[in-house]
Image (tube, rainbow, N blue to C red; front, side):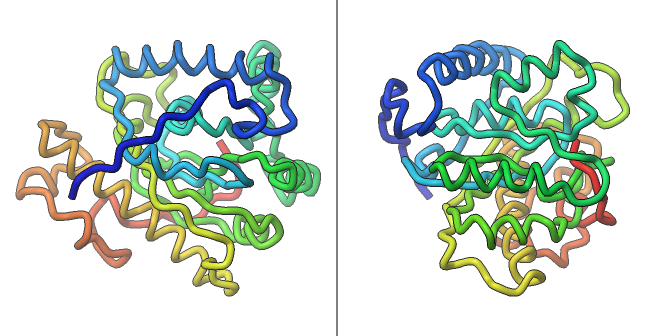
Length: 272
């Protein structure tokens, strides 16, 4: 299957990319992205697939699996045409230099326990203004690189926002910076695939069906990226069962698979 070519989009079309934000805010985000994308390419052979699937305008919610602390940087570089507002756990804002940096990008602090109505309202306000947000439906970073169950809270936001959902599948970040490791490795492979947008009218009203649909879409992208990376020589230990016997096609992946890249983990309650 041939890959769609991303259309040329002007970075100076500020009102389309992030309506309501100042040119200075958008240019600062762009400058940061340009530097970080270069670092990702040099260190991790960073590659993006499906850039043409990013909606040109209108409110959208990017959802992605969560493997490491690098994920917001990686996803930010992948969907740069539509700069997003990230929802990050409140603990990350305790370190003042990091808090200042995150707030300069418009990040929303999310309480680590219980519902956070303030963050919820802020996210809805972003979408109602025609902007985009990034959420990790698993709620926290994976302990072993495998996808976890999606949290039910994301369904409430999707129903309230009535925005287009854009699934992303990220692979390789766990090997670069696994949970519990103080600093990342400076070599490795990281790839992201952006899936087809899902319009609000296509989202199931029942919570279980909605979470299953979103999980399946993200999982398919993760498996497809992993297969492509392994065909080019990537050999992560956690996926040894796949690359030792040959990689399956992404179309054959199913939620019931016992493969380590597709099995789920018990739900967690905080964002990382």
